[in-house]
Amino acid sequence: MSLFTLTLSLFLGFQFVHAGLPDKIYGVNLGSWLLIEPWMMPAEWISMGGEICNDCSKCIQSEYAFAEKYPDTVDAKFAKHWDTWFNQADVNDLLENGLNAVRIPLGYWIVEALVDRKTEFYPRGGIKALRRGLTQLKKAGISVVLDHHALPGVHTPNQMFAGRCTPDVQFYTDYNFHRALVWTAVMTALSHLDPAFETVASIQAVNEQIMDASKTPGYGEFSKNFVKTVRAVETLLNIHYKRGHRSFDDRTSSNFTATMEKMSRTSTFSLPVAKALQDAVPILVSLAVELKIQTSIFGLSSLFRKREALVTNFMDIGWQHNNPSTPPMPQSDLKPTIAIFSP
Ligand SMILES: *[C@@H]1O[C@H](CO)[C@@H](O)[C@H](O)[C@H]1NC(C)=O
Image 1 (spheres, protein in one colour):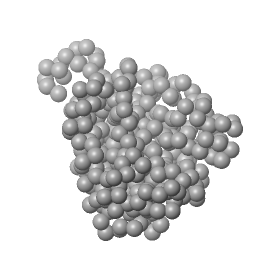
Image 2 (cartoon, protein in one colour; image 1 turned 90 degrees about the vertical axis):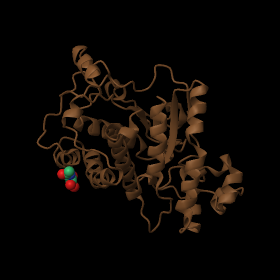
Image 3 (tube, helix red, strand yellow; image 1 turned 135 degrees about the horizontal axis):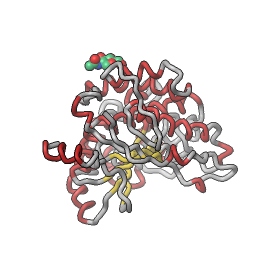
Image 4 (spheres, helix red, strand yellow; image 1 turned 180 degrees about the vertical axis):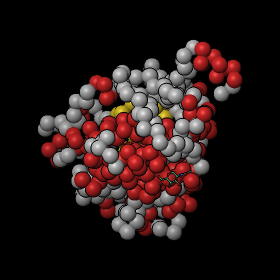
């Protein structure tokens, strides 16, 4: 920020709030970039070494099956795909066509520490490709929805988009709800702290959960905890999401992860949220080093940082039948108001 804009923003009372989602969204999905669905790109998939068959659980037709089959070459093959499937020429196309937003489907394995490598097989290195693309989208002023499209434990049977094609669905369990909340805490923190994520305006909890709500036990509670986790991280960053929001004033440290660690051990947050924050801490500490992200949030430059709260995003309530479990949320939690980093 130049001295001029700094002075001006002080004068105008911090009006240069980051835009968040545009008023009117002209968007597109960046399908098969960081989460390959082979049906979208059969020729490339086969040339990479994948297969196409009628029942995707029976051949190499998901990221999981590919990584299990080719443990030594999977990372290099996927890195090449990430570099070529979406790059600057595509960003230029988006602009030329008047688009102002994208949704990026992601697997839980983009947060690599969440993967149990003994039983779960996925490519590594996606986070760097994501940051490269986000940086290009940011330069183009394009808003981003990060979409948790493939959940830990698999959330929908026999679907390539779930990352693994299998009838064995294990997402709707405490262990995997917890891992999804850790993912949420990490992605929320990155969205607010990593400059590459500057135009990220929203996170989607889950793509296409099982449509029959009677088969998704605990999903409603998970949805609430998803919103609470996003808001907990924002509370610790002093990003306000509702009117009358009280500033978080326990600033004994300028180290964000240390603050998160400390607060997760108090009664400030409910247990599932506190546990998610706790397990997000070591992941954020190592990502901050690996990606060179500044996590000292209370320094001078941060006094003038302004972020809007993220829009929390779900499938429409009509997606499920048999007593839809996406719960009605209090309006105040769902709808972010303008956020100012109050010094
Ligand atoms: C910040 O706190 C974390 C623990 O949450 C610690 O591992 C890290 O070294 C601290 N960073 C700095 C720069 O002190």
